[in-house]
Length: 345
Image (cartoon, rainbow, N blue to C red; front, side, top):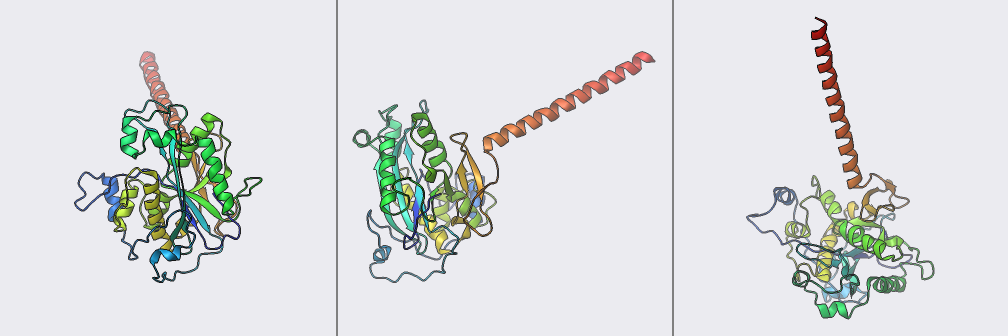
C-alpha cells in the first residue's frame, strides 16, 4: 500500500491494465461467468466525471463551475489516496520471451470527492528484447520510436519515486511510505506478475509501496455483491455502470483512466471495499500474491489471510494424490485378504 502525511484532499491513484472488449446488449459471445456477473450488478445514477490533465491539482475546475455533489465523509481509518496503475508490457503471439514493461501510467483520484486530480505517465525501454513485435505494436499502439526514446524500468521507477516525494507520499531519504494511501490495479498482474518478476530478474531494488495494493476487481465484486470477481473485467464493470470505454483499449494510460472512472463510481457509493488494500505480493515468490484482511478498525497492520493460489493448488493436488493412494492401498488389501480366504478354504 501507499501512505501520505497531511496531503489535503484524499486522493486515489489509479494504475491500469489492458481492458477487454466491451460487452453490449444481446451478450453474444460473452462467457457465462461474465454474463452472470453483469446480470447481478446495478447501474449507478451519478454521471461519469471528466478527467484532468497532468499537473492539475484542483479537480473542481473539471466541472467548469458546476458544484461538486456533497458526499458523506470517509471514515478516519480508511485510505486517503489510492494510486491506480495499469502497465503495458512486451508481448507476442505466441509469447516466447519474458514480458518487459513498456508503459507505466498512474492516475490520481481524490477519494473524498471521487475526482481524478493528476497523472504520471512514462514509456519504458525494454532492455532484454528491445525490438517490439508487430503484434505488440498493434495491440498497445506503442511505437518502436517511443520505447527507443524512453528510459529503462529502473530509471522510470526512480522518476516515479521522485514524483511521489513531490507529493509527500514517500520519505525523500528512506523511501518509506508516508500517510494513508495505496496502489490500486485491475487484478494482480500489474504489480505481482509484470513488475515483481521483472524487478527480481533484473536486480532492481524492491519498493515497499509497490507490494500491497487494492485489487479493483475484488472490490467491485464485493461492492455489487457478486459471487466472485471472475468475468468481472474492466469492460464488464464499465458496461454495468452504463459507461463507455474512453480512448484506445490496451493503451496503458487510457485503461488507467477508465479504471479511475470505475473507482470513482465506487467511491461515490462510499463502498468500504475500495478503501483498504486487499492483496499483497508474496515476499518469497515473485509473481505470487496473498489476500489481505484488515482489522475491523481499518488501517493498522494487515493480516495475510491465505497463501498463493498456486501453492494452494499444489497442496490440494497432493492431498488428492494421498487419498487416491490410500484408496488404492485399501483396495489391494481387500483383494489380498479375499485371496487368502479362498486359499485357506
